[in-house]
Length: 195
Image (cartoon, rainbow, N blue to C red; front, side):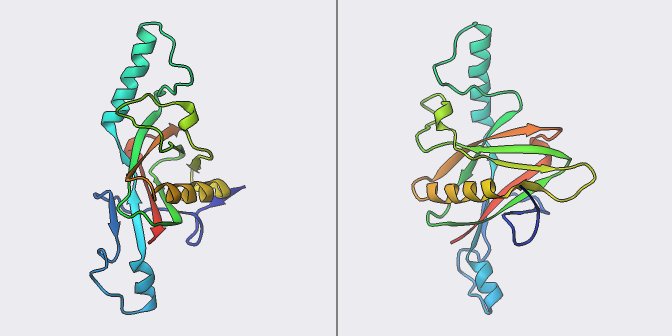
Protein backbone atom coordinates (compact mmCIF):
# COMPACT_ATOMS: atom_id res chain seq x y z
CA UNK A 1 0.00 0.00 0.00
CA UNK A 2 1.24 3.54 -0.69
CA UNK A 3 2.36 5.64 2.26
CA UNK A 4 1.53 9.33 2.47
CA UNK A 5 4.31 11.50 3.82
CA UNK A 6 4.26 12.01 7.58
CA UNK A 7 6.68 13.04 10.30
CA UNK A 8 7.02 9.55 11.74
CA UNK A 9 7.06 7.59 8.49
CA UNK A 10 9.87 6.44 6.24
CA UNK A 11 9.41 9.41 3.92
CA UNK A 12 9.31 13.08 4.72
CA UNK A 13 9.25 16.20 2.50
CA UNK A 14 12.50 18.14 2.30
CA UNK A 15 11.79 21.84 2.32
CA UNK A 16 15.17 23.39 1.62
CA UNK A 17 17.86 22.46 -0.90
CA UNK A 18 21.24 21.64 0.60
CA UNK A 19 24.57 22.64 -0.92
CA UNK A 20 26.70 20.05 0.85
CA UNK A 21 26.44 16.33 0.16
CA UNK A 22 26.08 15.53 3.88
CA UNK A 23 25.96 17.04 7.33
CA UNK A 24 25.71 15.89 10.92
CA UNK A 25 23.39 18.05 12.91
CA UNK A 26 25.64 18.30 15.95
CA UNK A 27 28.59 19.33 13.77
CA UNK A 28 30.36 16.03 14.37
CA UNK A 29 29.78 16.14 18.12
CA UNK A 30 31.50 19.39 18.88
CA UNK A 31 28.38 20.86 20.46
CA UNK A 32 27.19 18.88 23.43
CA UNK A 33 23.38 18.49 23.62
CA UNK A 34 21.74 20.07 26.63
CA UNK A 35 18.42 18.22 26.58
CA UNK A 36 16.80 15.05 25.28
CA UNK A 37 15.61 16.61 22.02
CA UNK A 38 19.07 17.97 21.23
CA UNK A 39 20.60 14.60 22.07
CA UNK A 40 18.32 12.90 19.55
CA UNK A 41 19.23 15.42 16.86
CA UNK A 42 22.91 15.02 17.64
CA UNK A 43 22.84 11.37 16.58
CA UNK A 44 21.25 12.03 13.17
CA UNK A 45 23.23 11.99 9.92
CA UNK A 46 21.60 13.25 6.73
CA UNK A 47 23.24 12.25 3.45
CA UNK A 48 22.25 13.79 0.13
CA UNK A 49 22.05 12.05 -3.22
CA UNK A 50 24.38 13.78 -5.71
CA UNK A 51 24.10 13.45 -9.46
CA UNK A 52 27.27 11.96 -10.97
CA UNK A 53 27.24 13.77 -14.31
CA UNK A 54 30.55 12.26 -15.45
CA UNK A 55 29.44 8.68 -14.89
CA UNK A 56 26.04 9.41 -16.42
CA UNK A 57 27.74 10.75 -19.54
CA UNK A 58 30.08 7.74 -19.75
CA UNK A 59 27.12 5.35 -19.60
CA UNK A 60 25.23 7.38 -22.21
CA UNK A 61 28.21 7.20 -24.55
CA UNK A 62 28.34 3.44 -24.06
CA UNK A 63 24.65 3.08 -24.94
CA UNK A 64 25.03 5.38 -27.95
CA UNK A 65 28.05 3.44 -29.18
CA UNK A 66 26.16 0.15 -29.05
CA UNK A 67 23.28 1.71 -30.98
CA UNK A 68 25.41 3.50 -33.60
CA UNK A 69 27.50 0.44 -34.38
CA UNK A 70 24.49 -1.87 -34.33
CA UNK A 71 26.28 -4.00 -31.78
CA UNK A 72 24.90 -6.36 -29.20
CA UNK A 73 25.37 -5.33 -25.62
CA UNK A 74 27.34 -7.56 -23.30
CA UNK A 75 25.24 -10.44 -22.01
CA UNK A 76 23.35 -9.14 -18.98
CA UNK A 77 24.60 -5.57 -19.41
CA UNK A 78 22.43 -2.69 -18.22
CA UNK A 79 22.43 0.19 -20.72
CA UNK A 80 21.35 3.59 -19.47
CA UNK A 81 17.98 4.77 -20.80
CA UNK A 82 17.29 8.45 -21.64
CA UNK A 83 15.34 9.14 -18.43
CA UNK A 84 17.88 7.39 -16.16
CA UNK A 85 20.71 9.20 -14.39
CA UNK A 86 23.51 8.02 -12.13
CA UNK A 87 23.58 9.36 -8.58
CA UNK A 88 25.93 8.61 -5.71
CA UNK A 89 25.76 8.63 -1.93
CA UNK A 90 28.99 9.23 -0.02
CA UNK A 91 29.15 7.73 3.47
CA UNK A 92 30.94 9.82 6.08
CA UNK A 93 30.14 7.22 8.74
CA UNK A 94 30.06 3.43 8.44
CA UNK A 95 27.88 2.32 11.35
CA UNK A 96 24.44 3.59 10.46
CA UNK A 97 20.81 2.74 11.18
CA UNK A 98 18.20 3.81 8.65
CA UNK A 99 15.70 6.35 9.96
CA UNK A 100 13.80 8.03 7.10
CA UNK A 101 13.76 9.24 3.52
CA UNK A 102 13.61 12.97 2.73
CA UNK A 103 12.13 13.49 -0.73
CA UNK A 104 11.12 16.73 -2.41
CA UNK A 105 9.54 16.83 -5.88
CA UNK A 106 9.07 20.29 -7.32
CA UNK A 107 6.45 19.08 -9.80
CA UNK A 108 3.97 16.20 -9.90
CA UNK A 109 5.54 12.97 -11.13
CA UNK A 110 7.49 9.93 -10.06
CA UNK A 111 11.09 8.89 -9.42
CA UNK A 112 12.49 5.39 -9.02
CA UNK A 113 15.75 5.02 -7.07
CA UNK A 114 17.58 1.74 -7.73
CA UNK A 115 20.73 0.82 -5.81
CA UNK A 116 23.75 -1.03 -7.17
CA UNK A 117 25.70 -3.75 -5.41
CA UNK A 118 29.23 -3.43 -4.07
CA UNK A 119 30.52 -5.55 -6.95
CA UNK A 120 30.18 -2.73 -9.50
CA UNK A 121 33.32 -0.67 -10.07
CA UNK A 122 32.07 1.90 -12.59
CA UNK A 123 35.55 2.96 -13.73
CA UNK A 124 36.42 -0.62 -14.71
CA UNK A 125 33.34 -2.61 -15.68
CA UNK A 126 29.97 -2.21 -17.36
CA UNK A 127 26.91 -2.25 -15.12
CA UNK A 128 25.11 -5.59 -15.17
CA UNK A 129 21.45 -6.16 -14.40
CA UNK A 130 22.38 -8.66 -11.67
CA UNK A 131 24.10 -5.80 -9.83
CA UNK A 132 20.84 -3.84 -9.44
CA UNK A 133 19.34 -4.16 -5.97
CA UNK A 134 15.75 -5.07 -5.21
CA UNK A 135 13.50 -3.52 -4.03
CA UNK A 136 13.86 -0.03 -5.46
CA UNK A 137 12.52 3.10 -3.81
CA UNK A 138 9.53 4.51 -5.70
CA UNK A 139 8.29 7.97 -4.76
CA UNK A 140 5.62 10.10 -6.42
CA UNK A 141 3.51 13.23 -6.05
CA UNK A 142 0.05 13.64 -7.56
CA UNK A 143 -1.28 16.73 -9.29
CA UNK A 144 -2.72 19.20 -6.77
CA UNK A 145 -1.11 17.50 -3.76
CA UNK A 146 1.91 18.47 -1.68
CA UNK A 147 2.55 15.10 -0.06
CA UNK A 148 5.01 12.59 -1.42
CA UNK A 149 3.86 8.98 -1.48
CA UNK A 150 5.74 5.71 -1.68
CA UNK A 151 5.48 1.99 -1.03
CA UNK A 152 6.27 1.92 2.68
CA UNK A 153 7.62 -1.62 3.03
CA UNK A 154 9.92 -1.29 0.01
CA UNK A 155 11.22 2.11 1.11
CA UNK A 156 11.96 0.76 4.60
CA UNK A 157 13.73 -2.35 3.30
CA UNK A 158 15.72 -0.31 0.78
CA UNK A 159 16.84 2.16 3.44
CA UNK A 160 17.95 -0.64 5.73
CA UNK A 161 19.88 -2.26 2.88
CA UNK A 162 21.72 0.99 2.21
CA UNK A 163 22.69 1.19 5.89
CA UNK A 164 24.06 -2.36 5.72
CA UNK A 165 26.13 -1.59 2.63
CA UNK A 166 27.54 1.54 4.28
CA UNK A 167 29.56 -0.75 6.55
CA UNK A 168 31.68 -1.93 3.63
CA UNK A 169 31.52 1.02 1.22
CA UNK A 170 32.62 4.64 1.16
CA UNK A 171 30.35 5.47 -1.78
CA UNK A 172 27.26 3.84 -3.30
CA UNK A 173 25.87 4.39 -6.78
CA UNK A 174 22.22 4.55 -7.81
CA UNK A 175 20.18 4.75 -10.97
CA UNK A 176 17.42 7.34 -10.67
CA UNK A 177 14.61 7.09 -13.21
CA UNK A 178 12.48 10.18 -13.83
CA UNK A 179 8.89 9.68 -14.96
CA UNK A 180 5.69 11.67 -15.51
CA UNK A 181 7.33 15.08 -15.78
CA UNK A 182 10.10 14.95 -13.19
CA UNK A 183 13.75 15.65 -13.99
CA UNK A 184 16.98 16.25 -12.05
CA UNK A 185 16.32 19.98 -11.85
CA UNK A 186 13.18 19.67 -9.72
CA UNK A 187 14.03 17.02 -7.13
CA UNK A 188 15.95 16.96 -3.89
CA UNK A 189 16.62 13.63 -2.18
CA UNK A 190 18.39 12.68 1.00
CA UNK A 191 18.28 9.93 3.59
CA UNK A 192 18.58 10.27 7.37
CA UNK A 193 20.36 7.72 9.56
CA UNK A 194 20.99 7.26 13.25
CA UNK A 195 24.69 7.12 14.11
